[in-house]
Image (cartoon, rainbow, N blue to C red; front, top):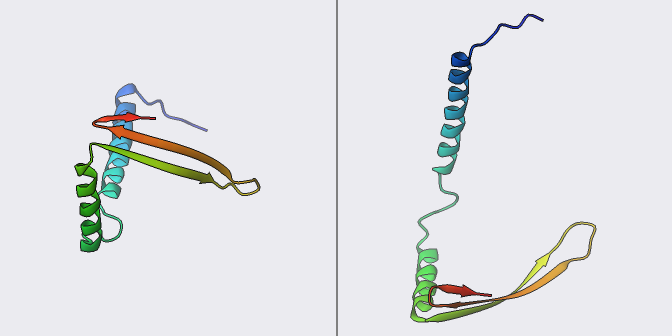
Length: 90
């Protein structure tokens, strides 16, 4: 095989083209919303939750997380999050 020698300036140019091509693909992929981004029913529900959330000075969430992996038993994890003002307590 016969390879040509590439100097640093050509390599830098090639890497710049590859980088900016990759970056443009990422930016184009992020610009399109998934589904209907202007759903009035969803907005109404979220606004109702937001107003209820903002009325409280503190919030508490109790949750159970179930992790299911094929071929093994489900793993359960319980947790509680408490928020007072702007701080989050565990």
